[in-house]
Amino acid sequence: MSNKQVIQGVIYFIAGGIFSFVTLETIMLWMWGVPPHPLTCLGFLSSLTLICAGITTIAGNLRISRLLAVCALGGLTPIWLAWVISLVPQHNTIPSPLASLAAAAYLLILIAVLFYSRRLSFAVGVIVAICSLGSAFAIAAYVKRASAGEYNRPEIGCFRWYPDRANALSITRDTENWIDRQAKDLIESAGIHGRLEETGGSGAPSSRTKVIVLAQRKPPTPVRLYYPRKGTLIYAFDGTTWRKIPGDASTYPTFFTLEDQNDYTMLYEELSDGSRQGIQAFTWR
Image 1 (cartoon, rainbow, N blue to C red):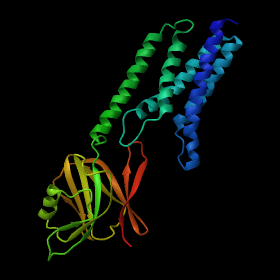
Image 2 (image 1 turned 90 degrees about the vertical axis):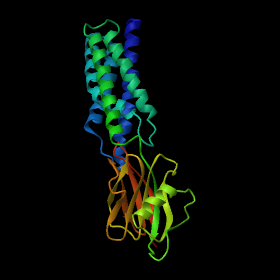
Image 3 (image 1 turned 180 degrees about the horizontal axis):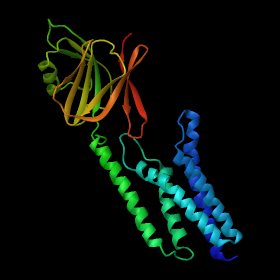
Image 4 (image 1 turned 30 degrees about the vertical axis):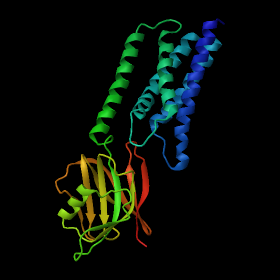
């Protein structure tokens, strides 16, 4: 057995182990109610195939081992694209270090399979095609998220609205100054009077875009409220209907959701990966 065989076999074996760990970790999320995607299962089986390729290499059958490695990488390519997409920035999300490791390991093992110990005739073309495909998917994911407002998400302030037409608009418990002069002018121009009391929210009002939610009583839920493209947008619920102020404000297709939870109304933000983050917006007891 030559040293090249041992090195090649160890490379396959270690890479297969890394991919197996990452894909199995994703599959195990079914224990928390997240069903595994079929491509993740394919990636796990391909990872085991790569481990078999390493064992076969050390056993001395280089032709079969390289064929197994090529097949394994073919099965891993779709899940690699998913790892690349997951590294594209998302709102309030830290990319997984394991996804970064796996994405880099894929490229390294691809180079090893195509060039070591003898370069395959189509090696350069495959490298260029795979890198171009990964770049195209990453750019497409970025453009899609940018057009949906992923990188311009507003901060959200929630206020209980106690109507009183006999008195001017007053604001209480607004310690972070959600309702500044501009927001107050918008509210008054819409004919809203009475007292506004802060009850919750997400983030801080210093953002260049923000949403202020006013509610007289518990709204029927769930309700979707869409993010503004710029400036301040106010949603007001008078106990019967929702109003958008200004009425012609331009919004993104992305939204947050208000949902009932006993004596509370929860605010859920939808993330680009399909998950949600929730906070308490209103208390009604």
